[in-house]
Image 1 (cartoon, rainbow, N blue to C red):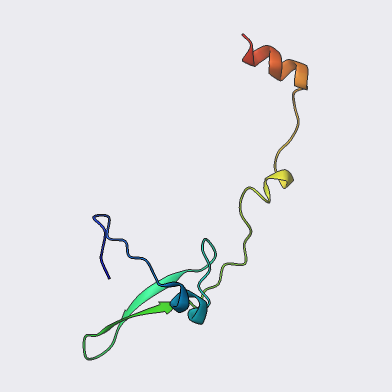
Image 2 (cartoon, rainbow, N blue to C red):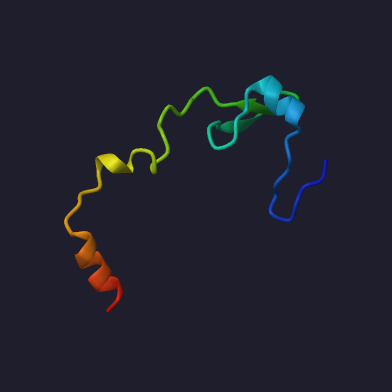
Length: 75
């Protein structure tokens, strides 16, 4: 397996499926055993939080009308 100049590797699809690793949802960590061998493991801390974009509607407040926004963008 080749490592990129940024230190990245591609985890093969069969490994991701077997470990339950999902893009943007799963945290992984590297662990070292007593013999000095390194292992990739799925973090026990699972992130149940949703994307900040999916929850943005809870925090956004409409303070300007569409016409006011257009007036600002058109100068």
